[in-house]
Length: 449
Image (tube, rainbow, N blue to C red; front, side, top):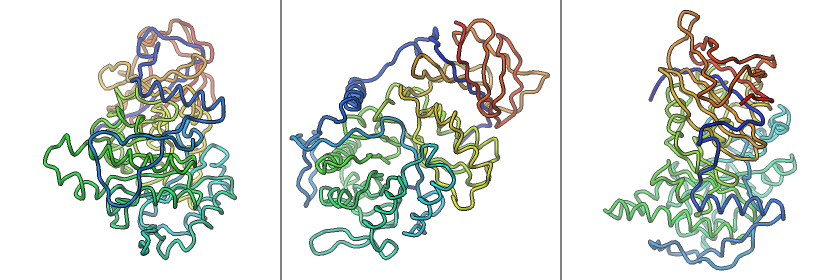
């Protein structure tokens, strides 16, 4: 659970457009990711997915270097074919979360229109855990008197519910983790009706990994731990989104899909600070080929509406997460959400970029001084593009000049500003005054190549 520049953003969404850049013209994914995407697409059509095998027996935990041998198991339906959207308790409540907070969050997602905009997961983060009984069964603490009843309530609101654990003996907050109880806990989650598991490395580092002096061996133990819970979840037969929270260690994007991960953190924790947000999204460059339906890079939860972020900073944050095909997990104070925060979080045209079924993450195309250009292809040949000012204000004295040819476009482009709803014409060499920490988001439906 719980670096570095100023910037503004200019975002375009282009329709029916094939750019000259080889990065945008074709998809590069590792074989494991290609197989995962193909399997998910086929499963979506057939209404089923290939099984991943039964979980190893619970009890004393032994981690082997090779991945555990897989056997046949009931096949859960595919999940996270688009980046998960919802709300997580940690960024606002941290250790204060309780049953009432989760019920209230579910009610607010419905009342504010966020559910209608696509936010469906209500995720309980750390500090819900109580003690294990003589049989090893984990019971919630007094803050959560009946987890099954809580899950039923969230489901009754047309939403889904998530929970949190760790492969270590303790969570980051010092509560009971799943070490030695993986299959037992997975069955418990399924019996409650849980739809999402965030699995945070936490105490597994000192409990298991650091018992080995060899760093490579430590990484193998970590991967085996995530695979063990993957098998345990698969053996339940319940569709459960599996979220890795291990801070991007050991290039998790390379092995996450084959270990059952639907999303994996790529960096350390986010905070509601401009520099931290910029540092995190900058580190997503080069990871685009690993994202796709069913498996997503996760730059961490949204901080929209938290801290002292300005309106424009919140817009840029939300827009860049959408450009990155990132999970959109809000973490703000829902009952006291300001209208401008709600406006940002429920902008359906921006959300449509994030939820595009092609599932391609944005690529950093080029930079010119303090201005960066990012783009991502969308279904049907469309492309979303961001022009980002990572420095100070660009005034009319020295504006940024748009170079359409470097993007693969030629001639005037008729566009729509997705934040104002106004039409705009983009031309080669046009001067753009980009204020610091500001954003222009447009869509081109008939781009000229």
